[in-house]
Image 1 (cartoon, rainbow, N blue to C red):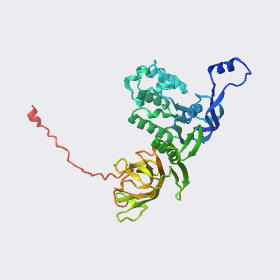
Image 2 (image 1 turned 90 degrees about the horizontal axis):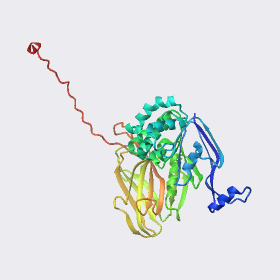
Image 3 (image 1 turned 60 degrees about the vertical axis):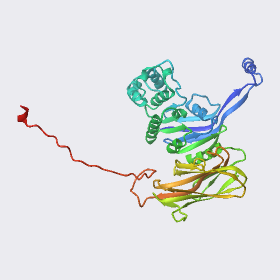
Image 4 (image 1 turned 135 degrees about the vertical axis):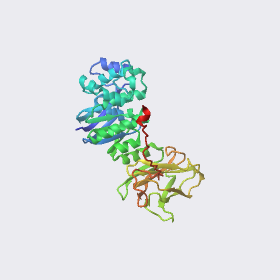
Length: 421
């Protein structure tokens, strides 16, 4: 079974003021140090148990790819310790290890041997690799003729031709068509069910939340957070917004959820309610019931433009539906400090039964990444129950209209044998 333990891990590169300093340091033993260390990763500690899936998130340059390269052994750590138990398969840089002038088949044999497989084993797995990659006759063409999507298909097929104890995946899966991405994640899920330990870097929030048990946030080369995926991703989402003059805080709610609130505070959310047909506040709605989401906002500084948006999320934090007043041409302009605004969004509750939350955003334009006045996760938690509709499964009630036509088998007439003579 796959087990990963990382202790005090760090990576630094030597930086010299000029090339002559580098040369002098090389040629003159015991000379004064002429470089300084630039740390890209420092003080990383975590442990992943067998069968656990962990996602790594962070802005570009946070050290995500460097961390994976050190774990897989393609980059040497400056300090710290890495302990791995089990057979490791890694999919890092796209086409890593592929020779552009060799065919896909030849590269498959070379990549397979680098993963520790014997030639006979690769030959036995080749039909399955070809079938999963679905690149047809291109398997016998040079890799330099491949598109990035074709390279990803072949690289992933080779890396997962046999179930590893540990699977490490970088952003490579973001390349290619939607069909193969779904196919790849389905294979990853099947590996998880069989006990494979997974470490994945992705900017795809839904992928991290649907696959991973926990997530790590890297910030400026250090671990900023290690928690449940939705908690880490909510905090990361807040950090992505404009930082000047803004606060980011997290607090535990009564129901055990961790709420993330960020923003400049120029406008603030005062209250959120879910109302029924009689304008009564409710915390549970029936499937198909008409409801109103009411949001009260206070303007605390003069604002030239204000947009309110909301997102309905399921219990895993995956987005079910979202809209804002910019997209429906109802943004407000020229607001003064002290004003209060009440927003009401009416809709039929067409979600499946379960627990849901509402995330809210106050911004200037379509995204809270531009002038984030306030972003609030878990602004409201509510339940959807089903006592009146058919017992369907899934996250959406589509109210499918069914029509069934039934006909008897057609009668086949057999010619009289006398007429055939």
